[in-house]
Each structure stands twice: as structure tokens, then as C-alpha cells.
Image 1: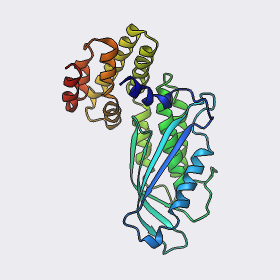
Image 2: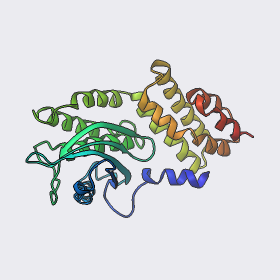
Image 3: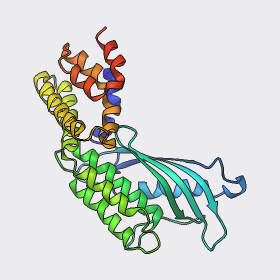
Image 4: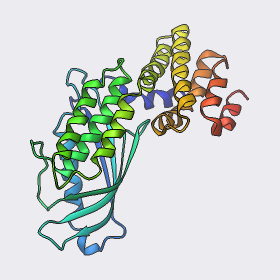
Length: 277
């Protein structure tokens, strides 16, 4: 379990090999699209990867690497107009404790097209920027209290640019509300940091500090659930981290924290029972 924990935290630790803030992983699927219309899918995937790898999504001073996986499911490709229009669904994730689903994503793309940032909104690069800033903001919050605030502001700038576009403004008002909910949930933002500090303290052999940090993280999470039991962003966080209970038990040789785990993740009580057997 210890080795698993270290692997899970690799993207939170200082990157030594490169200054890129994201490690891009793009998966494209188009099972319902006519095979004859799929010829540009490889170039689309490459264009997205190049865009992510050549643009910054966080402060260079941190020099962190984070997985940025985008799973795109192309429903159909419209070739009838002057543009090749893609209609897709997508999942944006850090492959850990953040996961965001887009059910109706429409964007133009032509073979050989390069993506770049400009003052004009583009529905392909704009969506990547929005979720890139959002994911990185939460990652930075997990390193230093509220340090993701500047990137939440960047995500909001993308929204404002999209809303100023008469052609591509659809759906961005709801994303603005989503951003408010996430950036304004200071208890979850603090819980991210305190949970990580509990894990880091174990690595430093400071068990009292780890216990205090975990108690604080749990207290914040319980406050959220008591107020809004189905908060989906908090649920994704809990569902991705409940298995850390085994690591904490091995480190503490104590089960004082298990009632809190059970309360937060009732559907995984069988897992918690196995830990102490």
C-alpha cells in the first residue's frame, strides 16, 4: 500500500525533468462515426496534445507536473457546411481526484490546423484552457492553502471570453456557476491541502502532525456533506481517496479515524471492515 500511495502522489511532487505543468493524455473514440469521416482524428489528437504541451497552465515557479487526461467521444462529424464540425462528449480528469464531464461539446477543426491562444475565443482550445486551469487550480490548492485562486481567475477569464462570443456562448453560463461552486467551496479546498499534509507527515515520520491534519480534513469534508450531501465535487474527492484508509491504518496502528471514513463513504464499509481484519 505504501508503494501505491507514493505512486498516487507522484504528480503532486516537484518535477525534476521538465517545466511543463501538464502531462497530456488524449484519448479519442468515434465508434458511431462513418469510418470515411474519421481520417482527421489522429491530427486532432496530435493538435490537442501539442497545444497542452506548448502552453502553460500554472505558475512556472512551482514547476509541477500533473496528468491531464481528456477522453473525447465523437458522436458525429458534420461536413455539410464550410467548416468540419465535431459534436462530442468528453471527460476531463487528472486521473485521481478530479473528474468533469461535458455532454455537448461542439467545435470546428480542419486537418493541419494549429491551436494557439489569442484574444479570440475558440471552442476547442477554450474548453481545454478552462478545464486545464480548473484542474491545476485544485492541484495547487492541495499544495498551499488557496494557492489556486489565480488559476480560478484564469478559468473565469476563459468563460468571459466565451460569453462575449455570440456564436460559441452556449453552455458557458452553467460552467460559470460550476466554477463559482468549486472555487467558493473553501472547506473542500482546505480539505485537499490538509489531506495531503496528513500523507506527507507520515513520510516525515511525524505521526501526531499527520493525525491532526487528517482530523482537520475530515472535519471539513463532513461539514460539506452535512450541508450538501450530494455535492458531486466533494464526492469525487472522497471516492478517489477512501482507500487511503488502509495506508493511515498501517501508519497509525490505530482505527480512531475509521468512523469518519465510514460516515463519508458508507458504500465502502466492506472495504473498511477488511482493513482491520
